[in-house]
Length: 238
Image 1 (cartoon, rainbow, N blue to C red):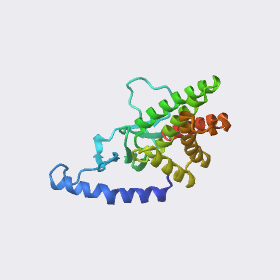
Image 2 (tube, one colour):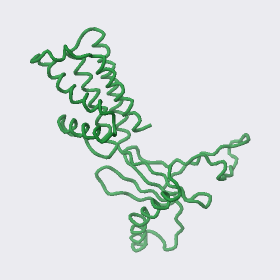
Image 3 (cartoon, rainbow, N blue to C red):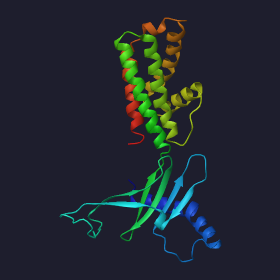
Image 4 (tube, one colour):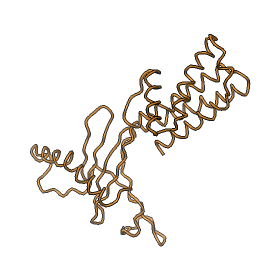
């Protein structure tokens, strides 16, 4: 939610940075008639490419309206500020966007910077599968695969935060370093940053048997932590 001052600042910046230059180009090339009334604007931020701009009918909008009476199917519904509950703007699943919508004589600002939402959802589902496997491993005393599965769960959950920012994930070392810094900035629980790094060490110890350190750890601590990491990742797309 934005207050009126914030909305005006966002509106002015969007118009200056993206909309006005794009309209000038389209008018010059004959793609847009000069004087055309613009009531819907959407800037799409696809990962790894330039923003795309949509105008008017190309911006798909759904208004959520509360009715005080029964509505007959096919009946025209009158929208007022009083019964308007919200506005949804259609957006491709893997890009962020800013939308400016003129409705009922007022401009509404819709902003969602999250990217890769579809990929994040897949990573979360995979993370949950590894979590269930870890639970089963612990129940049956299989500590080596337990730490492997906890690690997979934690790493998948952690990279979701960078996908939401439009960044791709890298190798294990870079992912750990980025997530630790992300935690230091207070964006996630600091314990989760430490857990990810610790699990990477313990799963190698458990896999290759070059150390018995993993046997001296409390497995429940790690199971609880990775479950919380999944929940935190889910908030990125909910």
